[in-house]
Length: 301
Image (cartoon, rainbow, N blue to C red):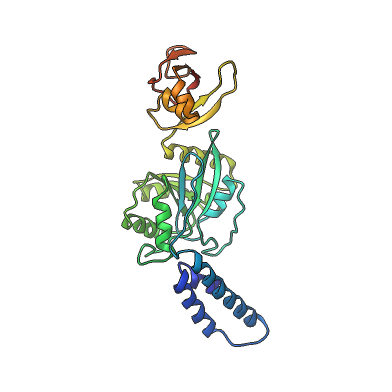
C-alpha cells in the first residue's frame, strides 16, 4: 500500500486514474485475502477520482488565508513538517515515518506575540515538481501566494534533498523572505545547526525540536521576524485593556483606525499613544503620526 500511494503522489484527475488502472492490472486477481482488499481500495479510488474530477480542476489546490500573515513550511518529504505544525497549533495531522504521509497543503494557526499567524505545510516537494501539470505545479502555486517561507531540513539527513527543493522553488521564480529550520535536533549528534549554517550561508538557520518548548518558542519568534510585521496595542478610551494588532512598518494612527472600523477612520482626529514613538506617556498625536513596535494606541474620535 505504501508503494502504491507513492506511485500516486503528484497525480490527479485523468493522470491519477491511468496510474490506478495500471496498478490494478499489476495486482493478482484474487477474490479474497489482502490482495483482494487492495484491489477493492484501488477500484474505489478510481471512482472517487472520477467524482472529484467532475467538480474540481485537477490543478486547483487553494488555501484560504487566515491570520495576519501566511508562512509556508517547505522541504523534502519526511523532514518533520507535520510534527512541527502540530506542535505549534491545535491541528491534528496524520504523521508517519515514511515519505508522503501528507498529500495536500495543511493550514494551521499559531499565536505569536498575541496575534494569529497562519502556517501552511506544503507536502514534500520533489525534483521536477514544477514541470508539466498536476499537483506539484499546483503546490508551487500555493507557495507563490505565501508571504514567507520556512525551509525545513532533517538534522539527521544530508543537505542534497533540501538543495533540490530550493532549486525547484527558484526555478519556479518564487522569491520570498525565508529562513531554514533544522528539525529533529534532539535526534542528531554533534552540532547540526552549526554545520548547516556553514553549509547554507545565504539563509538564517534556526534549530528546533518538537520535544523542546524553548526551541519552539524561539522558532515562533523567528517566524514573527520573517513576517516583517510590528505590533501595536489598541484600547478604548477609559479602559486599561489593550488588544494586540499586527501592522506593517510605517503604519500611522489613521491606518490603525481604518483597520478597526471604516467609520472610526472617518471620524478619528488623532490618538493618545504610550510607547517608543512618543516623547511621554499618553501623548496626543495626529492622524499621520508614525507608530512603532509596542505602541499602545487610544483612537480619539
